[in-house]
Image (tube, rainbow, N blue to C red; front, side, top):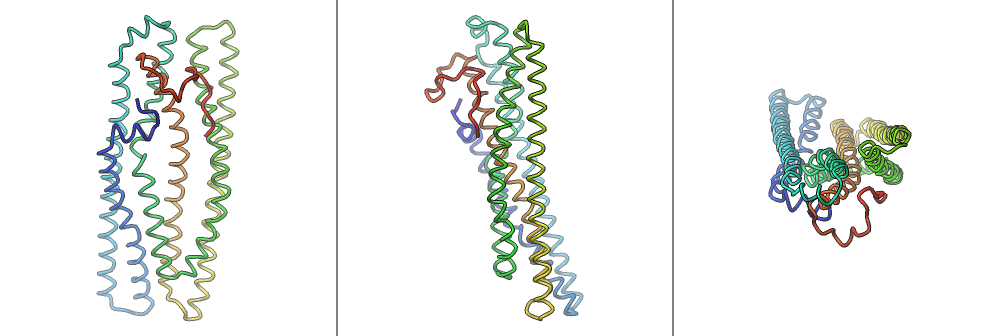
Length: 324
């Protein structure tokens, strides 16, 4: 198996990644269009424009929204197929392997533990394969498209709104690293529990209880870190919207900008929140799946008798994953 998760993604699903990327690009190219339709509709209403113009703009908005949702449906279904196909492929590699020789060379207990681990860890690895390239491409594309539209529309309001994302550049990576460290330890702890259960050690019961408690503590720490991070991110978003409404409203009262511009800027800020959060989630999943894939490929190579990668030399089957 390829040494890294991204190597596996490109080797096994390269052409499908290209298809997913094409759909993702089409989706993010449409991301700013609804904001422009909203701006024009609001301006026509406030300036007592013709109803015919408003009607055509509303139909245009509905058409763009429909096209956007259909493309997202196709993208999500295609991602689901790639994910399930990757899981099936990983499990078939195990079935096609010469497990009999592994049992002959090692104890059946060890082989059973490794197979159970591989079958469990194939799911998250396969799920990530579907998002590996299309997800960051889509979310970064939406961010660039919407931010570019906002700056073209009203650079000062856009810059003020973007200022509230600066603190996130500081606290999000720090909190994300803390989450990743705990997720890595959780993977190791689950493997240790599997080993003690199957091997039937005399003190296995106490080790299992301790391990279960450790997993509980790690999960609770992850919950706290993750949701506090989301709270701070949402707080920054709402503060940026409040600032845009306040300053934009003052500019409208002064007759310096149109009310539709304020609506478009506020809508753009709202549209940035989801892709930013999805991009952070993707980064966290990449860190965790990178560890899972390394452990998966190590166990698969051990079962099939493949020569270990020189860069992995010295790692035992239950060695601690590196912090990410």
